[in-house]
Image 1 (spheres, rainbow, N blue to C red):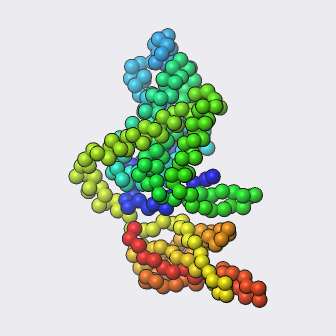
Image 2 (cartoon, rainbow, N blue to C red):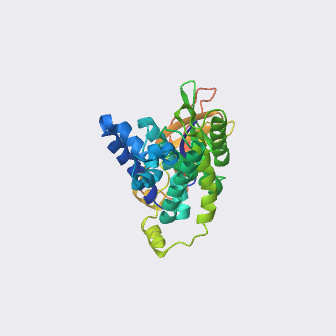
Image 3 (cartoon, helix red, strand yellow):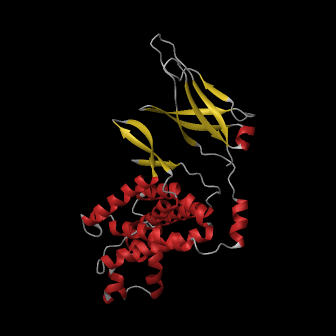
Length: 324
């Protein structure tokens, strides 16, 4: 299952979440630039439990390096795919959590979640000399917070079936519940870092996120947050949307909806629409012309049903204008 996006649109642009993604990418390139010294770089800035439990190893590090590693480990990655997977999950789930908490509380939440996941891993691997790196623990915290804040949201998920892409919306509580169960089973069925994956760090981060989001929601927001919300308010609808098409037995046409923001209705826009009809699903690129109004119907010729007499219907999308 590959998550593509959630159906709960954030009201504001995720400034902090975007900066976190950019920071992870930037530091990944710094890490790659170390060349043959990359292992040493990871050992210094990664989380190595033995540094804190074995005095002979800890003596090689300064006090500043010992403290810094408890944060820096969550901004390093083991490779391109490790980075891509983490940043994609952060992109999908982080914007909504930031939207609810506000930028400053979200930044604190993210760092505390990552730190808690690192400590969880540290104490379960107290004398391990193997470094742990990656944003997975912090992102697990974000996913735990998302489960609490948006349990009824839906996750648009790509499921390849015999090389055919199938798009389905899965309830967030189910998607994240399955994810957590897999992490727990992976942790219980292997060592604390079985197969190179810090399973218990994921579990610890997820649980920490659930607790931290409830605590931080009680912390008052500053006036700066209010100003930032005004400056970063979104004006558009999601680029990728899902519509459940419906029909009638004698009608060759299919009917669905497409959502646009007032600005998009005025100026025109393009959307990707995943059209679900029964067990069928396909993704279409739809151009919305400028000047559309609420209720107008966009006709996509030849994309309806194929009737027994050979007649091919159209797909008719009714425009819904929503605030971004």
